[in-house]
Image (cartoon, rainbow, N blue to C red; front, side, top):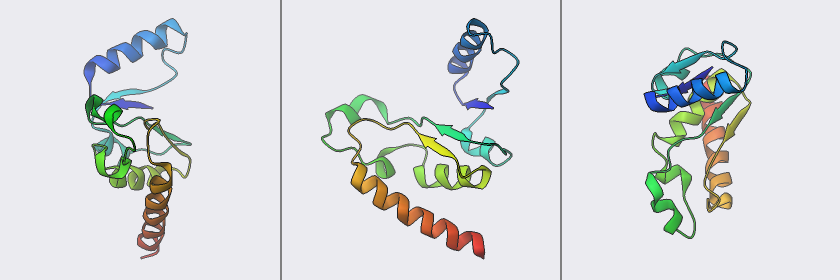
Amino acid sequence: MAVDIDANKISNLKTNMRIFGVEGQIDVVCKDALKALDDMDGDAVFCSPPWNGLSYQNEERYDAFQQVTPDLNELIKKSLKCTRNIALLLPKNTDIHKFVRDLAELLIDFEKESKI
């Protein structure tokens, strides 16, 4: 399933699906991804969240957990409820060390919450 809140991006996706011969093989939904994830179940989730405009390019180190909208914590936790196979597309200047520390903390919290 492909989900995007932007109708123009959905239209572009459908055009690309026709071009590449995969039309009808992927369900396409124009909806807020955070809401769509509540009802999803799948093998993998690929997220390419907005990076808050082009300002990320001016930063030496991009802090994904502080700057991505919607909230990256919520996006990852909802994705984990669908599958353990998650891929994120982030800017090349993401502070990867901080990202890994923040992600580890999120995963520990998620596991604790899941056991309750």
